[in-house]
Length: 515
Ligand SMILES: Cc1cc2nc3c(=O)[nH]c(=O)nc-3n(C[C@H](O)[C@H](O)[C@H](O)COP(=O)(O)OP(=O)(O)OC[C@H]3O[C@@H](n4cnc5c(N)ncnc54)[C@H](O)[C@@H]3O)c2cc1C
Image (cartoon, rainbow, N blue to C red; front, side):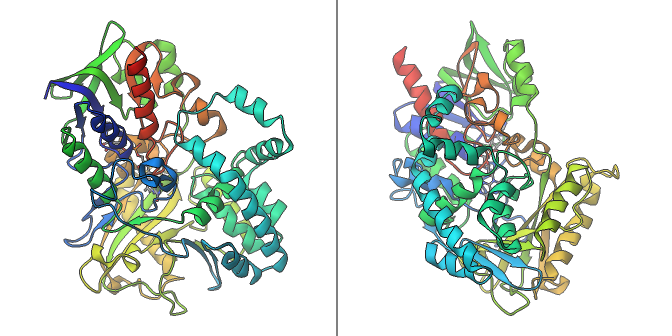
């Protein structure tokens, strides 16, 4: 166990991706995971009953399909290690309280036809938006899978052309600004505004406007991929790849500190006192708020800035259920999209929900989305059964002072009650078992999800790109501590299934070769 070139703290998919590339390059790699299972946010577990396999956190694999990891199958996860995807169409649908629906399809013209049900003019505007999104997609996608470019030169370059300035204008706008500029219909606006909500922010938050273009661009080019067998199949394939290359992935090992000798990371020590040496480097899924405590001798100013990074103002809560039968909407239609957003009849209500959250309360209108992935992959449940994965947004600290451990059952029931307004067969007799993860449970499953924040820290512009999580830590390295590399949703490009560990491995390999 102590003849390792590289020790990786945490078996989240980003740590595993970095480990797998380095193992394939001939390094002897050891991955240490605190939990008794692997994958962090990309894991499939029997959370409710035997035979019911639930994606505990991430369900939708979107961005990773543009990553050369999968686009070029660089590690043979698909061709050798059994990773298979299905891409259901439509990937996303908004279901309004009155039963009307608006779907985003992979095919532009089909989405236009959906939007035309509400406004012909908006269908035309969508075509324009979608063409622009496709034009920007290669630049956006390329930026996601490398170390981030420095901000100053990037802004200067954008300022040199009309198209660059338009891109920069959209980047600074709120999602609300964008949907109001493009669309006239209240529901069409709400449908696209909901995309910001998936990022834990109000559509009124400035500097979220590009999200609409990124979402549309990715939906049309890639859609939403669901690994057959569950989200955790990506993790399984990565673990198999690492082991095949001679590396090890070990559960139930909680790393307490990164050992630093003469300004260089040399290994880790666990909470039980075991030491693991790393001849070449340490990769850590270390939340910025933990850096000061976990990295010996770290520069005080680097640690202080990291500890000052801010969370999203809303946290996430999820409800998983084992169901007797596949879900049906009240109009009798089965679930046909991966992500189903349950929305009010008026956009203003969605915006006001965020005002409730902003002041620490619960949103009067729950912002529930759900997926029932067994509709596309029945291999996850016993024959004829189904699963539900629903999510909503809540304050991390409850204004009533109650702990989430005490109160999460009541909140789960509130979400289910709300969903019953849309779904015909979600009554108590339709549900076999429930599992609820409050924001507190979420941070217990991975320190990345501190405060119930899916992204580790907020995706605000001042904590994005080369400044994520801080300007000094933006290149996946820690100033003053050589050979320590960072992975996690709190690093560029942020929370999501990106396979961002590839960029960390590339950076590390470049550094090691240049020495
Ligand atoms: C409820 C929820 C739903 C989501 N849905 C989606 C979705 O549909 N699509 C999408 O793209 N993204 C989604 N995300 C976000 C996505 O899951 C994460 O951004 C992503 O999984 C982060 O991967 P990671 O490898 O960087 O970190 P993590 O997955 O958090 O992995 C970090 C790992 O390191 C381990 N670890 C940390 N510290 C130590 C230590 N000291 N010692 C040992 N082990 C340690 C942790 O236990 C964990 O296993 C969702 C997140 C949540 C919480």
